[in-house]
Structure formats: structure tokens, C-alpha cells
Image (cartoon, rainbow, N blue to C red; front, side, top):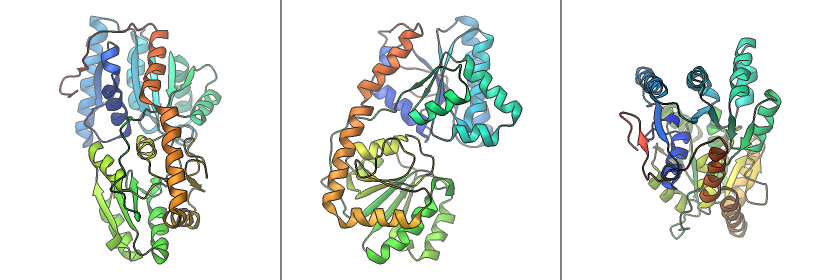
Length: 358
């Protein structure tokens, strides 16, 4: 399996760590190679070179049954290096694409030659795994010969603890970036404070914190918005236990781990349209992407109507635990492995790449 170092802050690392927590590496004979160590360009390039070198040595020493390669639209060309090595060694590979926006990447960021190369790799994957049915459909249209399977991200199955809930604290977890809808959220929150002056907003994630703080000062809400920086899983769990609502304003979010964790924690969710997990008035509230007025209205409804918030939160937790339980997801992934010729292992340990901590 190839993906980012397990200590990095992205969603793929969180997913792989969840796989480990729920026993994937104890059930299957997997070796993990870290292809990205985070940090600056030189550090990331060094990690890429180390992973490529380790894979070349591995392929020369013994031919793996399968390479499970994690990637995303903005990391496709990094992943393509390892797909090319697999093809050169005549080893099958499973491409695991995360996040949303792959169709936009394909159409907007790849020229004619780039699109041909993308199709080349997609068609030669033994299997392509994606988290949502929407992405599955777009990839099948993009490359009809490709074998595309929808596999949701798993939830942790942690007990529900909501005793410390704050009825007025809203939570955003994600990168501090305009593309994630952060500034639409801040604008909506500024308007919300006129009706709910007690409301607070916690933004957890990396990015340009200084710019976001300046924007809050312009809106006059700096005293009510807290930027925590990146937080670990335990800190995130504690934050969600106290949240009145979780907000996902991103236009193309797919199925982020943080959304699933919020729903499993029994937090009512307000999300931009596009998520296949959140259904309007069923297990959350949905607003048109970029519509600040609608977002403000949805947040106000949850803060004003406790019964609505409780009903949506209960349904969110129930729906996500049925669809995304770790046991179910790992069983599906195990079936894929078995179908591609991988045999189960009794070895109860994750074998890490040099310099990587399991």
C-alpha cells in the first residue's frame, strides 16, 4: 500500500490510520510505503524518491500480488509514477482515488495529452476505488473500460458522548481556503450573529490563518471566531462532542472523514449540496453552494429549533453507521483484495517504510 506518511494531516492519512485501527493490516499481508512526508517541497520530494526507490527494490526482490495506491485529483501525477512502476513490473495495481473534483481536474487541468495519459492509467488499473457513486459514474463516463468500485470511508464506531454540548458553538474542520467555502461561512456567520449574538464559530485546520483573521476583523466577528490550527483525532472528537452544529461549506467535498465523524458523533450537519451522505431535511440541512443567505438561514434554524437539531443528528448518526461502519467497509475492501488474488495473513502488524511510524 502506498500513500502519505501516517503522521501527516490529510484525509488519506486519517483513512489509512482508521484502516489500521480496525484491523486491516492484521488481516492482510500489507507493507506500507510513505510517498509523501508533508512539509516543504524538498521534504516531499525526498519522501517520493525514497518510496520509489523502496518500491523498485521490492519489485526486484519479489513481485507483490497487488499495489494499493492512494491518490487524489491534485496528487494524480505523483500516483502515476507508482502506477508506471507497477506496469513496468507487470504487477497489478488498485488505484484508490479520494475526495471530489476529479472530473474537474480531468477537464480543466489536463490538456489533450494529459487526458489521454489519465485514461491510459485508469484503463490499466485492476480496480479503481472511489468513495461516492457520483465519482464512480463520472469515472465510468471518462474511461468506459475502467473497473470502478464505490467504497465509502469508514467511521470509528466510538460511543456517543454529548453531555458537554454547547448549544451555540458551530464547528468547521478543514483547510482555511476560499475553495473550501470558508469565506462564505464567515460571511454567513457574520449575518447570523445579528440574530444570535451568543453564537461562536470554531475553525480547525491549516491554511492562511492571518488572512482569515483579518477577514473576521472586517466583519466585526473576530471576538466570536476561534482558529485552532490543525487538531488531532482526540481533539477533534472532543470538539464535536460540544458542537451545536457541524458546517461543511465546500462545493465539492465528496465524503470527507470529518463529515462522517461529525455525523457519527451525533452532531447536526449543514452542508453544501453535492454530498451524497447528507440528505436535506432527512439527516441534515443542505444549501446551494456559495449561497450565503441560505447557509445563514440553515444555521439559524438549527440554533433556534432544538427539536429539529436533535432529530437530524439522530438520523445522521444512524445513517452513517449503517452505510459506513468500519466492519462493513473493511469486509468490502477485503473482498476486493481476495478477488485480486491477495491471501489473508495472520501477521498482526503493519510493516512500515523506512522512517515511517506505523
